[in-house]
Image (cartoon, rainbow, N blue to C red; front, side, top):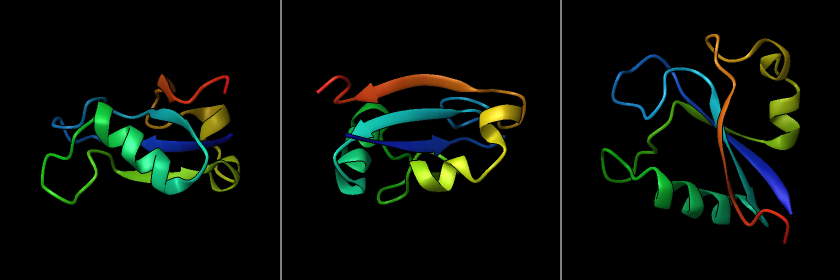
Amino acid sequence: MKRFYYTFGTDKRYPYRGGWVEVWADNMQEADEIFRKHYPDRISGTFNCAHYYTEEEFRKTDMCVKGNLGAFCHNVIGRIGV
């Protein structure tokens, strides 16, 4: 099981301001499907988030320590514990 991270910006239409949602899935395609079930696209074909990362990409940022716009993890979803 892998972790993927979907981050949010300052747009008030996002589910959260800053921070991220962690998604547990086997691959990015599955993670995208899980994320979209919980946070549907506002515009068809466009994720309801600012950016997304694999675990390796996310760990290269300073968000784990400093947060994203002052916020941290809002939710953990997916195939947790499988």
